[in-house]
Image (cartoon, rainbow, N blue to C red; front, side, top):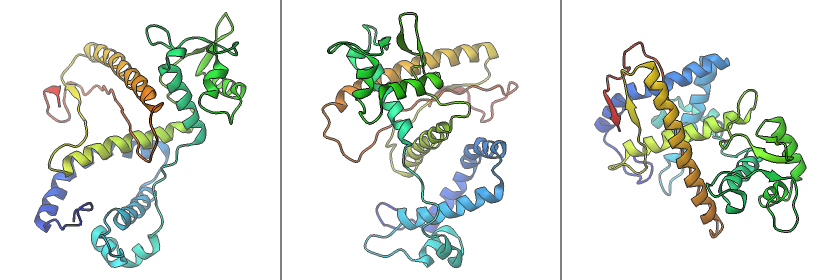
Length: 290
């Protein structure tokens, strides 16, 4: 069944697709299973979460237009017993909300990296005084351009504590890391895990489900490299990726000022990965763009 068109997919095609999905899904889930074990999430807990999500997705994403989604049909789609479906309906709904502090922090940093009044000739974020006269750029002006609900001093104290910024010898506020990446015991890192992996997997799933790729989802990959070359390529790709993100952020920030707003959302992400495989490739590929 095609969730968007409401048309049925022949059982033979579904069976073939399910068989082909087995190997890539096993590879996709392996690092997530490793994360589950490392974080103390047991198989029964994960299985319960999957049951809830299977029911939730079947209930909402595979409903037929103009017809009420029944327990029996959800059971048919998921393979979960009808009594269990009745118990689970309404549970396991994905959480889309972004924590308020995370949204505010990201928005302020994005503006610091994009707005011409807060960047130098090379597009790098300027060191900012705490306050300034008139229209001169300052940290206070930066924060208030995004929100007036939180005092700039409170934002500064939080950022100093999280080591997002530092105070230089001229008593100016300097952005330490141009990419806000929560780490350590910062719980906001789990939000990014869910959001970014969701969007990457959603793009890839759309691309294999339709007649033609809908989203840009590509990678450059080489196997059989020396550890030294792999490290050099990782460092260089980080530089290229950050430059691409900065350019995209500047253009989006400028366009946002003229946008009327709506319910759409956009995510432009990059990833860099490198590992040692003892001279073996886990997929037999030779390398190159894909």
